[in-house]
Image 1 (cartoon, rainbow, N blue to C red):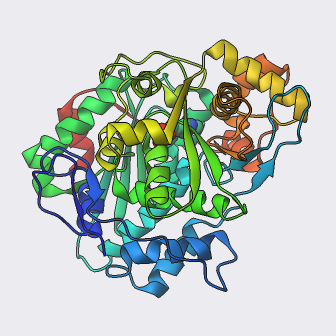
Image 2 (image 1 turned 45 degrees about the horizontal axis):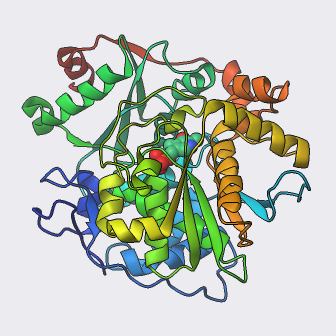
Length: 433
Ligand SMILES: *Cc1c(COP(=O)(O)O)cnc(C)c1O
């Protein structure tokens, strides 16, 4: 059974439970598996996503989570559809065989529900044996906050405190953040996102808080999100009789790292496409550019506005520079090209893509052109529901996308959040009894 060690090599190897509850390795690195188990073959009864997923996680976790408990975790966490939608082949679309893997049918309508829900249930599982309560502290400006809040809501032994910048998230995102949930406290910080992040960092380093509370985090560097994100790669790839191309709309590179982990465990993948917006550190690196992060800039696909991808260190720990360049092809897509891709795909196939998915669809088109029309079937991971970005869809297509009932219902609820001054003193006041 794999143990986890730090990308920086200065920390002892730990169990999954320790890596999960700690988040970051003690030497400041990211936890990576010491060994990668081979992909478990599908069993007779593995005909649903949660069943297949429990089987895939077994060689990783069986020493720490018994088989029955693991199956209960995936059944409860992955209780929504993950459809693989083939796009009709439009003659002028230049798209060939393209499939969209819709990862946005969970409660908060982004792929982050998958990782957050499995992670929350694993944490609750480990907290069961302890006479203690875990406090998850998250700074958020986008999809992570609502996925984590929803994923952890009502889990025994775990509480969530969300910090978001007041007035600086989109109306849909704000509604999703301030929905009332058991065991979740939403704090509207009077300051920008950077203040939220700084407060969380300070809280982790504060002696008074860390002696009174068991604090943990839930961002994309946590291995608790990484392992479950392998599951849909396996689920999708096994629906084909041949190797596929996975195209991953990317920001912090957590999703792509999970795909690489699945491939390292034996999943047949022809190649990965890293689809970025104009925050293009990684595509430039793949083309031989410098290993230097940049400031982030704002784009229409805002969940990917990351100048310094936190999972780059882990991805680079799994694959050498040469292997990275051989395995992954990168693309950087401007806002203008994103809107054009949304229009092109809608006109050719009637499919409404959100801006993040559109960056992926455009990357596939460019890859096919660059490789002279390589015929490998492409699977684009669709990371968000278009209804999360009504203004961008309206701009591109001239109409607002249909919103699922659970999103529309949020406007009928009483929102709940408390104001917070951007100081550690104020945060202590909220967290300590
Ligand atoms: C978080 C997010 C991404 C980027 O995922 P990473 O794992 O950070 O690369 C892409 N699209 C959407 C909609 C997201 O919320």
